[in-house]
Length: 219
Image (cartoon, rainbow, N blue to C red; front, side):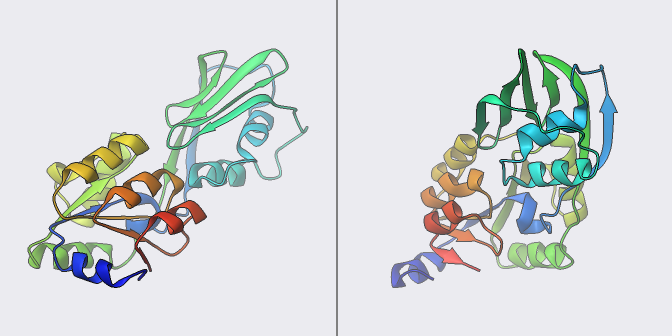
């Protein structure tokens, strides 16, 4: 806990915003399915490796695990860009590639979609119930797809009204900032703004450096 003032603020918390990945879940994403929509000009595994090898995002790590041992060549990427909470993009040769939660795109054409799975922590459901019994209002906020987040929320014992999905880092931050006496719990770089804007920001084990600097408490 960074300072005494944080302890005072903890006693006034009314709403707890929780990121999903790495907070309620173990944060170890796995690619469960890869659906091909069109044949890319370069092997898909090579494209994924070229774009995601620089990122530390959990989705990037999952995709890198998926292509492990399948990469045939090290493709050179130009105009590389990673936008937190959105995805990565870059040019390979004359082709533009983009990977985000909607799928993998070549020259803005969808060439593949992937599905991810993550395991709920064993005590998440119990802890959320205890928070509710204390009169606190837990809410799950995530940048992931609606279907994925709702499925995880149901497993954790939350109602659909307690869940917001498809949020950008700025949208997360705005939600937290508008709520009176709010706590934000997260571990990713895309949680950093919300962690800084909350009355109390809590970074959990495995958090990225930027989240640790933004938070008031580290678990």
